[in-house]
Length: 235
Image (cartoon, rainbow, N blue to C red; front, top):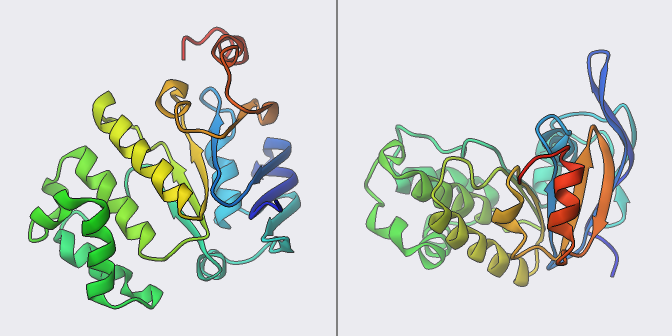
């Protein structure tokens, strides 16, 4: 199956500091790829290149086999790329309902957007009139995911979904991510904590100092290998 998302020999930098050194990465439809690695490995930069918010110095970005290198983020979004950034990305002073209303720009009407959100995350229906900033961390992350799903993404990019959340909430969120992937999108998940995502990942790509050091299916030996790749990390 041809990948929906491909990064080919991508180099990227901030000013004169190169942070990605020839990254190759693919994600197919209905596949969850976990992008792991220690702090500073280049995970978030890789995600930003995929979303078009950080231009590669060299290499190619392909979407559905088409070269979209250098495309503006808004054009990639229209083509089906959705980024749910670190920090949840909701409007804290707006209600849940108004946060969802913001997503009608994607072409769906309000009722359809709300139906998608409330079917996937029933707790949001009970919080519809509540300001997003007063939701729990897990509920805010559900709202961020619901906003992303309103765009009917072909490629869903998730950055640090587990940040600041209890393990039980993280497990529930990743169960939802697995279900979302089964419905068609290619899902690329950046995670600092491997244990949070290994249970639902179809493949794992590990970055260390801006280079791919591992790419393959999760297996029993991967956790041991990760400890070495993370330079002694217990993750």
